[in-house]
Length: 165
Image 1 (cartoon, rainbow, N blue to C red):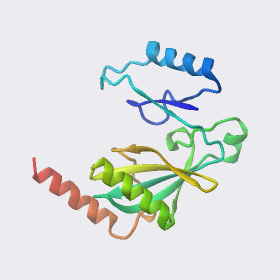
Image 2 (image 1 turned 90 degrees about the vertical axis):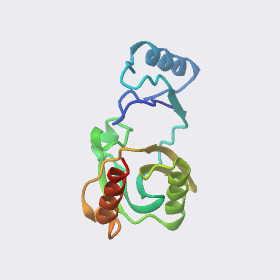
Image 3 (image 1 turned 45 degrees about the horizontal axis):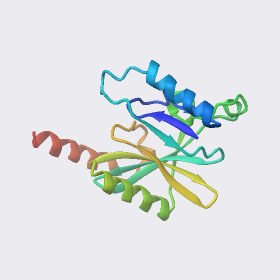
Image 4 (image 1 turned 90 degrees about the horizontal axis):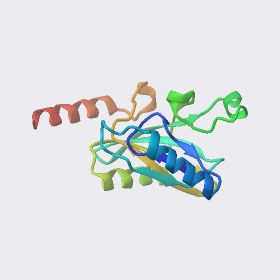
């Protein structure tokens, strides 16, 4: 299983636990070491580890799919034992055209969260697809990774949000 602190980003503090003793040890470590003063959030997620899963981040704007990337570690990093497909940990993000069923999954997650701009992380392993996590402050970069009109729609959302305050 994978244990993830809720209040951190970029794969920081994320650990694999292979059995009950290692799981309890990770939980003890998080309780003792992690400093959550910035958010007051001492919670963490426990997720199934899917070793051969493909890792995607789908972007949703007002509940609609607007693009996606596949995040993948280079072969040498995988051979060295790395397993976190975070871009900030060395993974490469490549724009992809997600199939309709994954777009729909990302849109349903975004609508359920009711967050206007959301990154929805999907793991696909065999015939299973799961929402791994969501991110209300997703990194955005090359325009080629998003659907046409993305930047204009994002700018309109920002203007509307700024105007409502």
